[in-house]
Image (cartoon, rainbow, N blue to C red; front, side):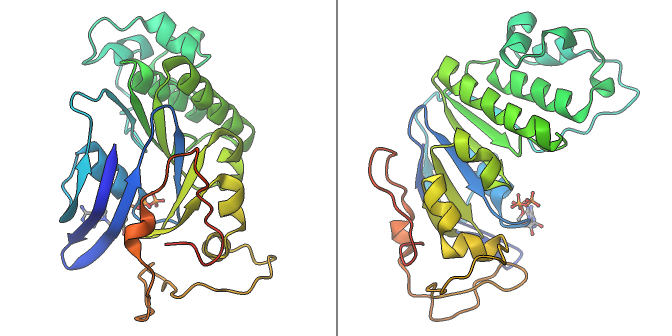
Length: 261
Ligand SMILES: Nc1ncnc2c1ncn2[C@@H]1O[C@H](COP(=O)(O)OP(=O)(O)OP(=O)(O)O)[C@@H](O)[C@H]1O
């Protein structure tokens, strides 16, 4: 999947602009960014659930997608079981196999409304993986999972990628947690601020500024900054957004200071 100069403006507000990226097969790419940065909005554009006001998304025709939304509202009175939920709208899903994949075989007959946060995330992941997608899109897959369980979820995602040989695009708030299980990181704040291998991004001044690593002393070479709502406020923002096309994982996609978008 590729995106070329995607932009989205709603009611006069530019939610996203100049997003160009390429997702390679069997690659895990993490989108990271503060609240309101446009992460979910970007996933929705890439999935074709909403239309950009500028730019284009290129998808392989017939691409099988698995999507795990950020949250699912469950009515506590709803009597549906996990097994039934996994089969909703997907013909012939082998429930046991789908749950074994996420190390939760015991949940088949549990009531959906009774699941803990961590169990629910596993079930949503099982459902997203059930169609054997070529691209798995996960919006904050560890939401509601305690810190101890979060790295387990990321390990599971890496195992799913290995089993299904699918690409994975996921949204996360915490780079340190996803570090071991991601090939590439895109740091988003309405546009792609920096990108690269997780170790590189974690040292990037833009990333450090965005995530408030107050202990890190650095010289800020960035040529723009964001206001409280995330808007770029420096009119002299001269960087070339066309370079936001992220190269394939094999090439050196360093995003050190001065190279961010
Ligand atoms: N349909 C819409 N109409 C108007 N504004 C919208 C719409 N969808 C999203 N927004 C706004 O766009 C901004 C980005 O929202 P989005 O949900 O993509 O952020 P996010 O990075 O996923 O945030 P979070 O980390 O809090 O989940 C928010 O300020 C949101 O209010």
